[in-house]
Image (cartoon, rainbow, N blue to C red; front, side):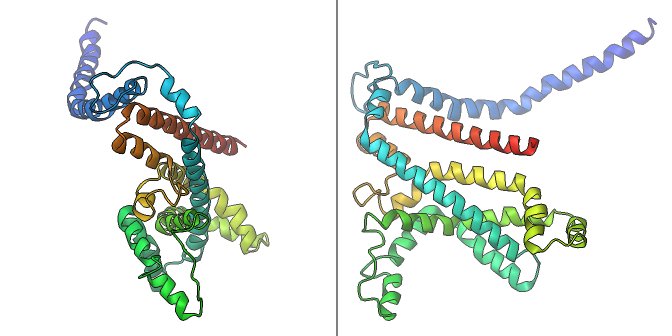
Length: 303
């Protein structure tokens, strides 16, 4: 028995040494995260509890005053409404269109590969670049869209980005066009992982194309659909670049998002305390929406 004790303790000491040395490898990442992520997050939480203005010598503690002011801020609620509409429309639009396109391009041929590349290409481009390009395309004076409509006989083309009723739908359409390629690629990868035996069994049971899609394809795509929906929702709630480049939040705040309003308060009016409160409210909203989506998906998987 005594002869076994050294050998039994040696692996434990070796595993302890390996475990301790692992900290050396993760330490640089932990330091970077603490300095550049954790510390700014805590700092913004602290600033949200103060009347913090850049350039001011005194930043008094105000508690939840910024959050109470935010609750009564009609401009914030308008920005939240715009963000919610954009997020819901773009998420549904890009998932539905991405699923339809992926279904059509499932078979690998030379033209399907070409179309996949064409659909995915806008996703690679920067949001700012996409916004600037579409701003020029939709310009009523020099834009190609209105010029083409004029050639078709439309005497009064729509004011795409100058109308309070059309600006947000236009931004939504551009957002779907920009991101549908990413959703298509993810769902296409999920479809290609479905075993062919399942489709053959469904065909033997007499299932038609639509029945095979709903009974075989969709259940197999649940993880991919959850992923794309979650990513689209989080990205939509953080809407800034596209609006900043296309409309600047106008006309008359009809396209102003929460992040756009945060930018205005923090980096134009220099009210960093108020801007930090907006950031924390948005963070809580994103966290809550993501948690609800994950919970719903988990319940469906359980059923």
